[in-house]
Image 1 (spheres, helix red, strand yellow):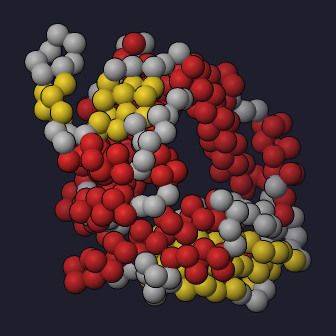
Image 2: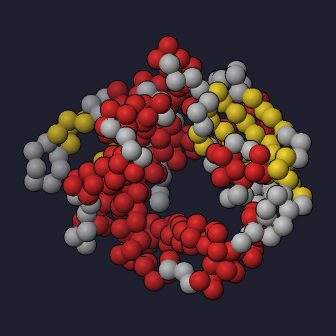
Image 3: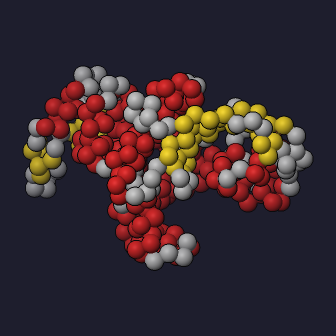
Length: 328
């Protein structure tokens, strides 16, 4: 990728000015400021804004303000690059005649709803509590299906796993599955109320979650991450536990703890009361777990890891042959 290094404010200026562009032989269409061109196809500021809103579970207006106030151009660039990736994948699937139809999205969403025993109204209400609209959820499902489709099309054999490989993975990750083990944790907790009156508070919390998650990915401590977001969301809580038996934790925390080795941190995850970031500091005690009890989950996990690697390789290949102009 060859980003054109300009002032971050260029994004804002571009967003204000409406540009008239022509797409091939089609009629010209008026769009807002262009922040990237991918093989001639524009990615607009409004698309970035909507992607931020959907990804963080915040209103579009808050996403707009967040982008305009963001001092770190790298943070904005990450959102743009995610949309660039989606354009590359979609176009490649179209070229191969394997694009995802709306009917496939319908079936996938309906399957999730029915599996949870919810009516359409209940499902929409649940999404709303997570700060997600149904159209935004459908776009997430499409993106996941497109990622899966392109990996199957180009790297299928590379992501397949054998039982022997899963057993090896189990042995390497054995500490995660110790029965009765005690674990010491560090958490960042962002309480989020679900009432309509708390909508603004919830939006600020989700912005803070994203900022803290990025800080931790960049190698900052939980204490440093907490300090960096307290101005955005003063209700954030930094907690360090004494040793506690894994099985005594909340189910959502148990699930994340079992995904992590000592020293590793989770991605943000939600509970009924809010959003957590979690780090496993250390473990002690416990007896070895049963491979058969976790074989299915580990097979899926190892397949997912290989799929991520395959997807990253595919994007690198697509970018080498693409014309990409990021205007940031």
